[in-house]
Length: 92
Image 1 (cartoon, rainbow, N blue to C red):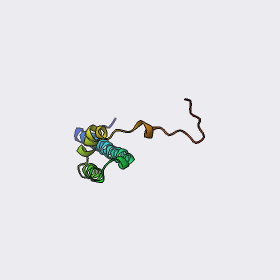
Image 2: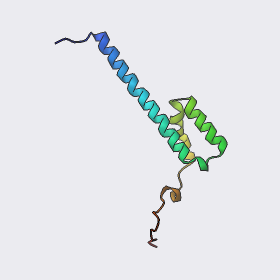
Image 3: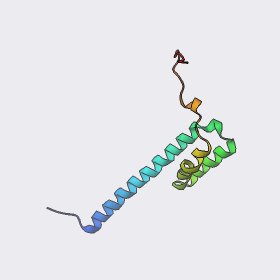
Image 4: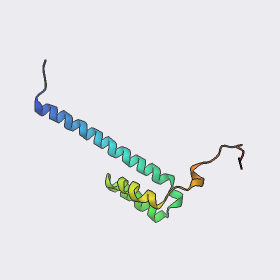
């Protein structure tokens, strides 16, 4: 059985870790932008632009700050979270 040299194995592990961490950072970026865009009508334009700039220009820290601080400051309203289907009857 032929095995790779330890340096080659470490390089392969490093590449794998780099790939997965980059994918996770990109996914975090996309999810943060998606959630921010979903509540854009409730934010003042200045705050919206500030959060977008922070998420885009500070790649890891920006989305984490949005999820830690921004979502608490602008919570979803219950009325907006559920829309009944057309023709649904009220149960009151």
